Image (cartoon, rainbow, N blue to C red; front, side, top):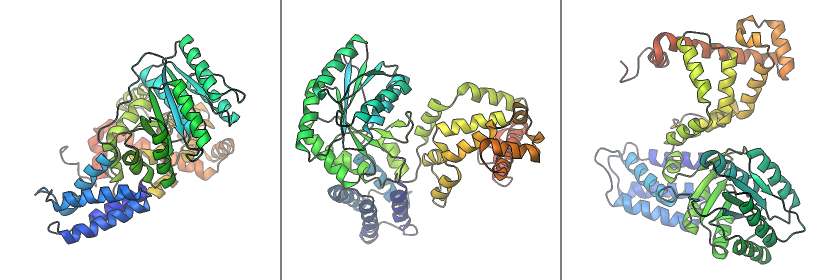
Length: 453
């Protein structure tokens, strides 16, 4: 989401490299670059002015450690101000109240409320062992009701039926009764998308809020919507007692202005971040981690949490024991690795959370290792016989043609996968013989890394 902004801010800090100290002249020049980067990212103008002024005051105030270069000093200041802009500490999402606790989702048309309702339900079911019920009061779009019912079945949530002939307030009243009878812990109410200038629709959602009496009223905002979404957030906050924000479509080509503006404009915390189309693609929002990602410092903590939540520990331990015993790394093992990487959103999603050097071309990484490519590789392995997966060296020319036909791909794709497997197998063999030190020594041109010599 912040690729362009991240590059521009890094470039601005780099412009100070070689300078002996921070002066008013070089600070003003760098701050000007930061201002342009934020405006290009669609950050609201009042937010940019406040943010820039805070940076200038801190930089000119001599807030520079003696051991830091000017560039490092400014990055430290920008990072601290980004954390403040994004909300400071992580806001809690605490649903400890008398059940059923009601969560109301509101927002503009097309922001992704229905999908977000299912994602939030899955998160509460999987992480907090909650019994969740979903209901739609979107009588203006009957397809939304059917969509939510389908998603409820997919994530394992209860669903309260509704139809376009009912009034939203009546639907909510019945849904609360159904949730109580079903012993649901949480009732998530998906409302109709509306424009903030539509007074009748705004009155409707206000009536739904009064009937639902939600503990949490969350504004769902599309990360790609730019300034209009920020204006909408301000209008919704004036009409409803919002308690938090969910940013959707953060995996797209959004400039990121909404994320940087909405917290400052509404004063409400960003609670979650939608990072993909899958029902498990919803992350808790951590201001400090997001600030680090914007500045290219990575977000290793979120990556570790992602791995813990999506990696099959039993399969990982079996592979570790297999490698330790010196047994071969076959195509069954490779398929497991590819499937687990797909669960995490592919290599691009992983690199997004790592401190990748500035000379790495993110677009090239996306092209080479996107989710579609991973699925193709899994399809190739699935087109093989169990014996071929166990003994890849038996795959000759005629077998490659058969596998290519079975997967709907070319023989070149099969060859590419087999080369990839062979490289990984060699690495695993090195690990079994000499541990990670041997592998790292090979990656560093024969020299083990510091601390492992």
